[in-house]
Length: 475
Image (cartoon, rainbow, N blue to C red; front, top):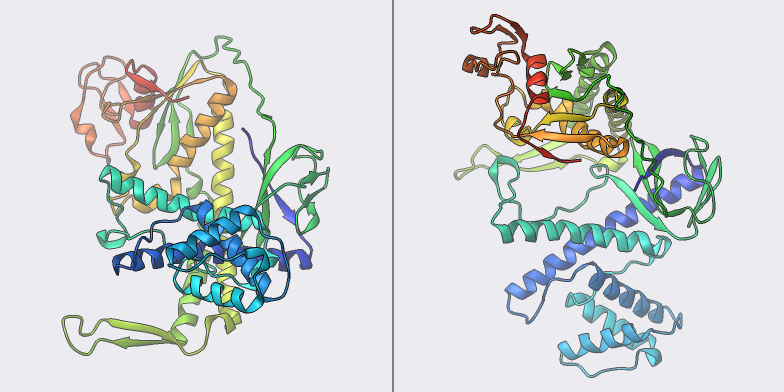
């Protein structure tokens, strides 16, 4: 299934609506985490059976809290059978008599809402959350539930999730404004035209790229609206599979291709072609220097309003105890401007890298080889090397493999992956002699002691990958 992501151009009113919608989704995500954490504390304190509530259970309880608040405000809204049953189940757990939800008065509704919320049987409800689309709130609950599911899976399999300085993470973290990705999920009543898209709550929004998304009333099932560096994007999921598969020609130009991913060059191919590293080009290097200056400026602005309190005794004497600010950060307009400028510069660098990578993958797949062989890199282990970690992170080799896999599946090309311990750099591609001295990464070229052939390290590794006989087909 192919998704379509493009930039939109909302009006100022729509921008304000999206800003509030992003905040509502972030609040719902944090409320899910806080609700389950409070239930876990109640369970540890011996207050009865306070189990974990998944996304659907929290959504049902949130709907009940919303209904009770409507009754408090005098808005008579008929309750569903599921809401009435849920309320009675919660009352029975609290050793309270059952009530008829449809005949509930404002005073009793207020009493039940406050009591059940205080007992962490219902999540908190805020009236301003009514402005948010119901599906975006439920999707925020689902996203938080997935984060917990990953934590539970790691504990079940014995894996430990390590954070900074080797500390074990207790669970999902709360989202913070300006430090988390802003996005909302919308479904139903979506219509697409050549130059605009209609979404719930916003109406028609202009597209910046015309004719890219499939046009029609019943073509898109859901959309995700996100904000990156002050710019808004929409990602659409079509109802029908629109991926066009291509039959490979295999006209004899090449029977296969080996690709060696690296740091000096993004990739080296078995035919001798080198794909250069985009981070070494003039524009990314200029933007990197600009980014450093902007980050220093932000650090100076924060330092002027920062007040640190230090430990005066004990084993932590001299260490920072607490960090406060002379004025709230949301009132510091210059700091907000500098942060936005940093985001824009960083996004510009990322766009250059991704554009270069996508064009390189199109160039590889455009040769229509019978197969492509890559190596299984231990990127997580390589990132532990403090001399290479930053460069490896900038290369984004994981993204390269993911996009190459998708393109190979689209064009009908077999993507092979050699074993992680296959010595592709140490073997001579002509005679098969193994030179263990090439383990040293400083050796970029070497002469074979057996046959005397001169090898470039990366190109020789790509040739050996092409000739590998033991591999795993991943696409």
